[in-house]
Length: 145
Image (cartoon, rainbow, N blue to C red; front, top):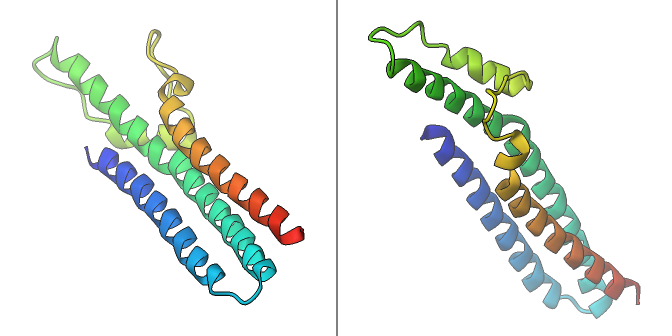
């Protein structure tokens, strides 16, 4: 539950930060003297926002999400053992989390693949990145004309 909460907060706060940054830059860009300068400022803001968004993606996909996968794998193992045994072997949650972060966690046959589990996350990040890139491209085209 802790990792889920951490990931949801990371994603929603990053999305809010992107929206706030673009809004603030948009207000300042409108206050500029020439339309040319305003579009350049917007293009710069979109480029910075896209870089920020990519950094959040890296933190999510390469670290936090792997923590979640390792924790879930360890808990699934505990649940599986608890159905058939009165005593459980030592809990290895930190070992499974470490393996997941390193990218070495082995999946059981029939379990969903990383690709299947990540469709929603990919859609979320790609949708926002495409929107930021479109804003950057439009602003840059306007600045150059």
